[in-house]
Length: 395
Image (cartoon, rainbow, N blue to C red; front, top):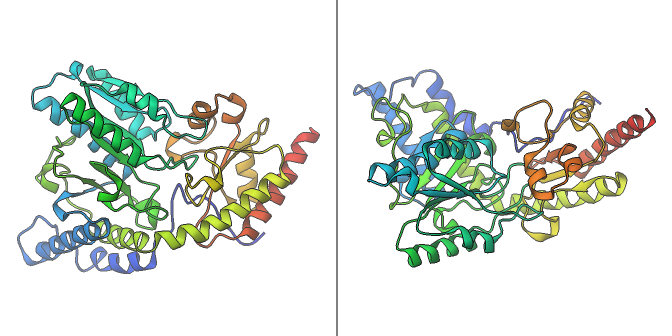
């Protein structure tokens, strides 16, 4: 086929033309350093602050609570390590602290947790069910006076499961009241802006991480939004930019583009989610009808607990790494799991943890739609995939 069909929107998204146009002046004539006091520098500073205000309005939070980062990974690390280091700096021993997460988080959360464990912090993992949804009963059992932080994805990057954030917040509030302590709630919302509301107050979180890469902004820029009660310690050191939390010369062009993309994504997320969700539902029905050995991973499409654009299937016995190459050659871009989980080989830890089935975990395909995806795209992909499966069965 001549046309390329891009179905890996969870990994990267095309740059929004409005964002590109907003960025262009800061790539050429408006090149000043935002920390400089001359006119060129101050024009760059004005652009950074205007973008901060733009994001703050889209997320309904005060501008000073928006911190620019290099993306979701840095934002997650700053949220997790920054909270714990601030609590430690206030006089609490690492060994007197516990943090709660799950075993299905993005590597930028999971490895940050490992770093805390090496410092003596206890890392507690709450159970998730087969769909990837947090077990609230188990969460309640884990919350005691030592817990200072709960961190989870708003929506899982592989299987698309949307976590019950309001119920989680309610349990954290009850534990805070019971133990007279603070339990900060961090949401990795990198996958959310195109498909879910990210208005800060509506989430009930203390810290929310966004990545412009996932919502038609430029790569290498994101934001960490926090509530007023959160004190953060820096995790890197240098100049005083971003209130000392993220030192280094700001990437003005990317910041301007990110603000435009986040604003655009949030402006009509509901309509986008409804239209793409309808395509996704049709696509899943078609896939499972024509490839009956395929199994859907994550929450049912009808549950309202799955990102509108997410399809994650397992085809036990199939080498899905090879299948993605076959599909790529035929013109389809899909993946097997999160790009940050590493390319080439290896089972999905998310599917392994949720299903306990090694055969499913080692044979996953992640197909993530965009606003321009159509049922015809999935029908064509299904035809290619079905022929490949039949060919492999003949060997």
